[in-house]
Image 1 (cartoon, rainbow, N blue to C red):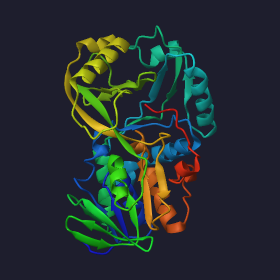
Image 2: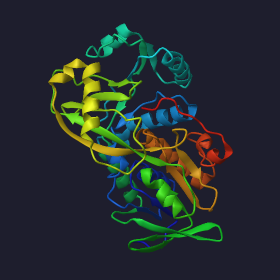
Image 3: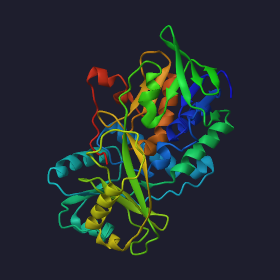
Image 4: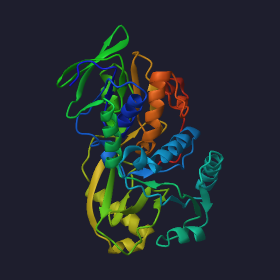
Length: 382
């Protein structure tokens, strides 16, 4: 492992690998990515792989739209098939007060070029005839949304970064961040020190813990999310969209001959617990069957737990921390980090090398906004 670097990136998930690639593509090749486990084995591996543009803030919409263009051309750019399925995201709304919010969000999305539209219950029945619609007042649908293989996408970025000279050290946790005279001087690892003037934190749900090594408090908290996949199940077509019951956060989409599904527990406190809870699995299955009764005939193959990295406004921390100098962060995506990885990689690379992000203005997500009281609440969180 190299002992000096122009930049050290902490975390080799989609964020760390995309940022490393974009920096190297722009000429900074003396980069070391440190990963306590293996490439893409953290929060990225546990993600459902969804990619969507249906957000409520302009910054998120622009980040998502830029990323979709990359996902669409990923195989051409990186030589790797990531199993892109653009079968759409279908949001089901069941509460009257949701409609005006979603219609406002929809209007913003459309002004920014997102081909999303309002759908009536009758149109929803055409898109997914297997869901019960007795309580559904309408919804939104974007045909460009979908999902990809998270592991393949992350490895595509990692391989491209390595080809450009980036070193990725797996099973190498950061144990300390060295600060002198108010600026970053290096990091300590389980395999020795590394001198560097720049550290970029991409540690997902562990970002707050790593930030504490530099004496900063980054408001990123881990919350458990469980996902499940059924055995192969042919009662539903593999062409269905990602379907989301917005009020509960229940979602399901075709995956590996069966269906991947999940639902967040709003009552669960922050923790690093990654066990699969049987009680919540049963609650999720019950909700799934209530919305789509055909799933009564399906069997659960397996389940797993990962983390959402939640911030007070459900939006990420992007950019310079402020003090110490030389410390930047890209974390706290509150469940929509993987899908925005391509855009975040470009934006952070531009910020580091050019002084400002040009791909998308990420200033609304600056880490200092919490001290400034300038939160940028995202409402389309599932």
